[in-house]
Image 1 (spheres, rainbow, N blue to C red):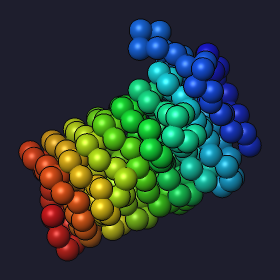
Image 2: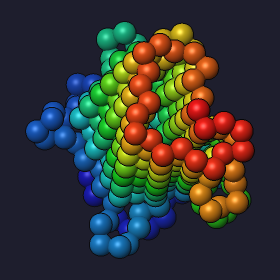
Image 3: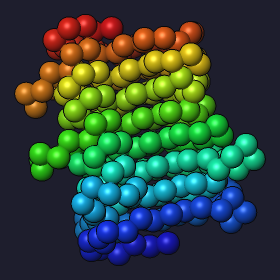
Image 4: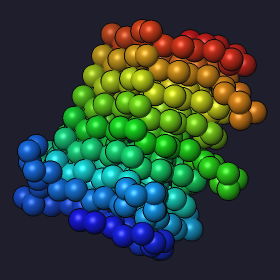
Length: 231
């Protein structure tokens, strides 16, 4: 599905129905222009921008999503229906009220969040969270720029296990760069990230905070310039 240059307002794109899913060799792809032009989905603080529910092997690429309650919501639909092996790549997710990217639900597994810009932009409208993982396993977050949020850059709650956060720049979020909390936030890998306060004039109070969780690995990260704690 090609989404042409332009600004699309006050609507939600819902990608749902497990039976119509793609497969690994032939994913369903929603893509904006890649020639320097921009496809923008814009709202005034209500709804979710993109919803992937019971979706499998769906790729969303090269789109700007701004001004919604949540930018992208990846959800499950019960014990049988799952959202797995989807990919968000090359998106600009900006100035949404609560979550830039929200993954939530048993079976929201093996998704890839790659090379996106997730921030609050220059509009003065601050997303609370860059990425929030309420639950979900084996998801990959890599090469993203996550910055300028009023609370957390990346938050992994109790149902988030065996996820990998690798090679991201996580910068100038007010409270925490990365926050792990809750029974079951286990076996996550925080690897080779730049976690700092940058040059935006906003100082993260703490780089990485593990409130609870077992067997999480932090390795080869650069963590600097925080007002309270690095880790």
